Amino acid sequence: MLTTLRSLCRKNLQPTATRFIVCSARNRHHVWPYKRFPPVQDKVDRRKIQYLKLQKCDFRTTQNLHVPPLVAMLMRPVLRIGALLLGRGIKKWWTRKSAKEKEEYKWWFKERRNMFLGCFGLYGLILAIYYITHLETNPLTQRSRFIIFNQEQEKKLGQMILEAHLEAHKTDLVPHSHPAYMRLMRVIAKIFAANKDLKSMRDTEWTLTVINTPLTNSYILPGGNIFVSLDIIKIIENDDQLGIILAHEMAHSLLLHSLEALSGQLLWDFLIVIPILLVWALFPDLTAGIIQIIGERIVNIVYNLPYSRVLENEADEVGLKLAAKACIDIREAVVFWATMRTLTEMHTLPPELSWISTHPAHGDREKNLNEEMTKALELRRNSGCSVLPALDPRDKFYKRTAKEQEIYFKQRGII
Image (cartoon, rainbow, N blue to C red; front, top):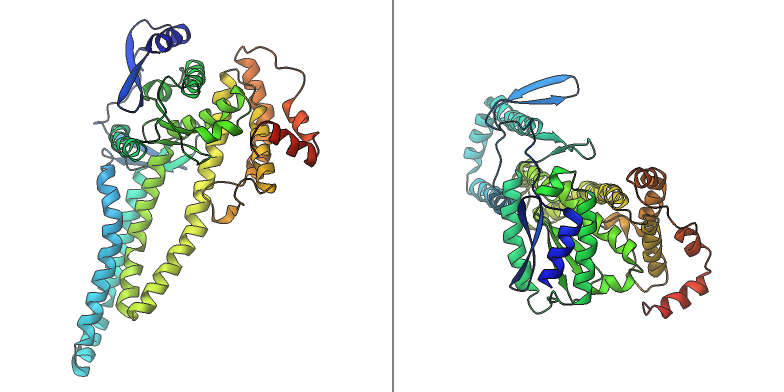
């Protein structure tokens, strides 16, 4: 197996100097050689002063203050619990005061209310400045994003989470000799070779883990650690659809979505820490608990979940481009999500409630990818790929009646 992977990678990547990408499962590792590219000439020394352009303004800052991801993950519950305990402590302290003492404290606070308001304003200003100075432009989409971690920290976080996931799935890991594992490796190698012009693609140490679980799912951990369940391969009709799924997961990593999501979550925790403190200081415990739960649910539905769906759509679009450059029949992307939509409508897959989901509805993804298809097909042609078959797989799918779809899925063993 090792010889096969090495020969496959050499064929695709033609290395002159060698680095290693580790593809891991169980406790064994394979090495994946690829070409070392010359360093980028215009690389900026991070110790030098950086510039941040926001609309027409130039903000000059010192080096960004990056937060260790582990610290950020620990800070999130600490901030919330700390605000809760401090609010309850203030409330208990207030109830022990006599009526006269309460009046004196009210007068004292009234005399200094401008100072307290100023402190709150200063706190908000510090958060705003930190947010602005940690905005960066996504090189693949040109979208402005807030990230408080660097890529070295992402690798450490990814390794830590990878070890935890490998331990959690230690009884479900599929060996490298499994046909599904080798099939996935071939498709990953194809996407990698076609997109090695991207520095982020070359710099990522991609790993693959295949797990035998009943979940129809694939996901990627920080640092390029791809997990695929065997069950999702049963739904995938061909290697083109498999390439679409893998390119989507690789796009998540290239776009640093895990770092962006964690950065945004931590910022929200700093924003809501004062409201949490005030709620627990002003209301009885039961009322405060209900208010906090309702408030967090509202924030989740109004901001967190829609933002997650935006990142998923972005990964769909970038993944489609990665697949197009790899000469994959990207029309199969629409067929795959149309299949998922149809299986959901047939109640084979769980029902969708997109407004409370981290992912867009299958039908929405089908529609969005159809809209992006013209540009993606042009990119595929410009990448020197062979001409696609005249029969469009989308037409073939849409011409089937509901009954024919059911028969077809039964023949494939999906239902």
